[in-house]
Length: 507
Ligand SMILES: [Zn+2]
Image (cartoon, rainbow, N blue to C red; front, side, top):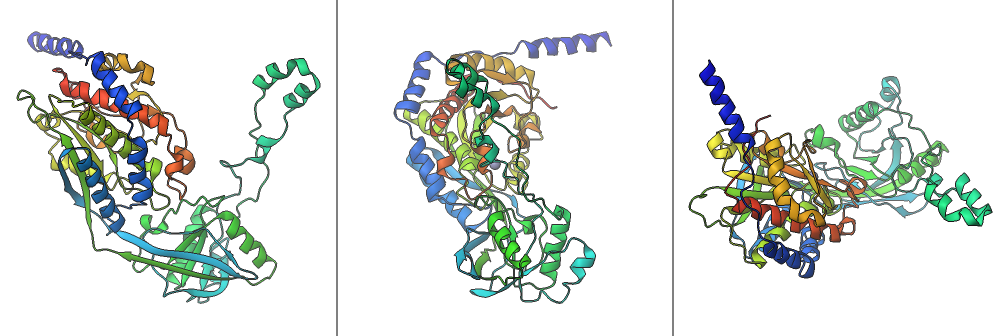
């Protein structure tokens, strides 16, 4: 018994004194900074990953196109062993849309910003007709529509109160008491303005009359009753999330569904409530592509050490996006900073001891499929396999400045990041948190004890445009991304060259 105890203590002491053996030189850091800030590739790489790529739902034709574009980018910066690997099967095949159009034609013409619901069906060319407003607050009211929706264009009610939370709370523009006092007493203006807080009280807008559960019922009802098309409200200020009901609750041969803004939906509803007929014309053309595979993309800078052969540092992000916008913050930004980090390492002619590999995952939006299947295919449940990945750095919280890293409870990692991180405090990398970060691709590796982490990041435009048609190049915090790429390049190189490595840690 005593012998076992001593043995356990020895292991503990050995582990707890394990620390980074060496940190790369200031000269190397200066080269990285020079490349990151004076020769930055961020803007150029951002263009290809957003404007040129477009939206890319997992397994869609647009995704396969995005994968090819990423391969060309990797090739152009001199990465090696560029390859896609099948990660796993997809529950449902890839889906793309070629056309989505809707306009009100009566009582006057007005076209709408719109998005189809992902994985919805198509109309038979352009269809038009009078709107049927399926305004049913309960089952009894819903039953009154039975047999009346077939071939009709159905407008769903909204389950969201209109409270304008993000974009323009008008109260924020009101003059506060402090502002008024400040206008009376000139001498105090500056002091008073510093203490003035904008009001966060919301105005009393239209309240929703139905629940989310009732809305889902109505949607299914309209589908089952054979509606020709379904129109639903999906955001304010023409910022549409395009959240797809059929992605979560898929049915055979779904009807086309079009998302429009709350303002457009509200205008039609109010007209219908005044007994004014509302006509629309619309067209959705979408197709599935028979692709039931989720693939991941890899490229690398090979390591040259024999001693560390087979070991590698992994950096990455998910390439798949939601269907509105160009997936700029979610998650082109992660792909961009990882790619730029690889470009920087090639540009400074880094010759790492261990291989540095970039991974662009797929299927993240449908349940973190790509990275999870990767972990299975590499047998990461065996510790000798898991130990080959000495560090994984994931980015999936937008383009805001990295402020540090979440080490997922692995306290042994703290010592490494303290040492590797000390020279990059000026780049904003200051905080090492024991906390877990948001659930995304790194968790597929954390599960097997691998030091797989996400950075602590400034939110910037991430929450505002998340999954919407406004997640575009313009949301990217370009200057922040330059810093982030330098931080990834520096940490990846340190982990690749350090003889010591962060021990596995199973939670
Ligand atoms: Zn994401």
